[in-house]
Amino acid sequence: MGALIEGVRRVAVLRANALGDLVLAMPALESLRRAYPGARLTLLGTPWHARFLDGRPGPVDDVIALPPISGVSTTDGGYPAPETLFKELREHRFDLAVQIHDGGRHSNPFVKAIGARVTAGLCTPDAVRLDRWVPYVHYQHETLRYLEVAALVGGTAEAYEPSIAVTDADHAELARVYGEPPPGLVALHPGASDPRRRWPARAFAEAADRLGRPVVITGVESEREVVEEVAAAMRRPAVTAVGTLGIGGLAALYERCDLVISNDTGPRHLAAAVGTPTVGIFWCGDLINSGPFGRALHRPLVSWTERCPVCGVNGHDARPPRCPHDESWVADVPVDDVVEQAEDLLRHQSRTP
Image (tube, rainbow, N blue to C red; front, top):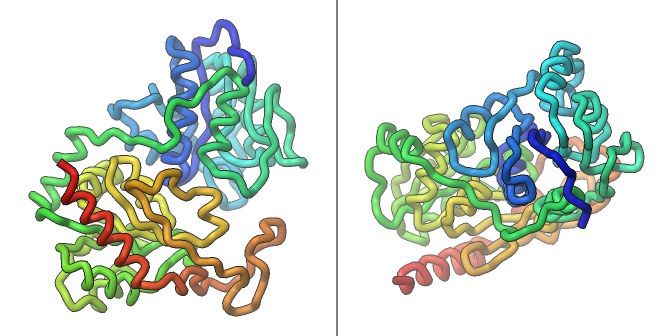
């Protein structure tokens, strides 16, 4: 473990990406908070981080919402960081800047440019070195990766599974949109930003029908088609929730569910972080990077597919660019296995006082 930095009053942490990325980084943020309890911890994020974390109990004191910056707050090219932003960030006089964003090719120059007294984070071989750093290697669990970075500056881990607080405002949003959820509710989340991580819609529908529970199918607007495909394939009626709740309202909905069945995606991580049991469908490589640590409440079902179903490219080699095909790499996960694990988790709940 690295030594604590003396005299730290302001800490900046760069983590400006998606929902699951934030959830997986929460134990590292908690670790930094414990290491520097008197410091102000600022997340360098995006506008959705600012909305979601505003007034939410947790390790983050405030959020600076970054504009689109290529390789930092967006994956799109053509967005350089404005010089006025660096001037603004330097005025905060951060004592410590921590990069738990990625391998550092674009993010490390950004972190160094904000003028913190000490920098720490991740480095690929071609990335600019920070003052304290650990190597970025693709196949490592994301939560453990970021805890290693926190340890560089004196952080220690007390919890490994992420936790997110659900607020009164979240509950009020859920009640305003959907009223009182029915008892025994099961949520399905059939979308994923990478289509290769999507279990087939017909499989979600069959699993839900066999459980015989009230069902809500969640998704963002870009996932409307697959949500409606699952609902149409079901023999039983289901509520669809597409674009109707913010992330806080979604957290409150998942908190009220007995179970969430999901692809490997941000909503599964959110459901687990609010304490709801999950059955997750994972490609084997992704399980290494983002799977749940425990099995009491979370059951990952794993596809061992090694090659693209279309062109046969090796999926375990993270170095070359991905092939252009979007066919599912997890379609071979059996419905029987998902139902078996779901029923076991639901039975366990009924036995728990």
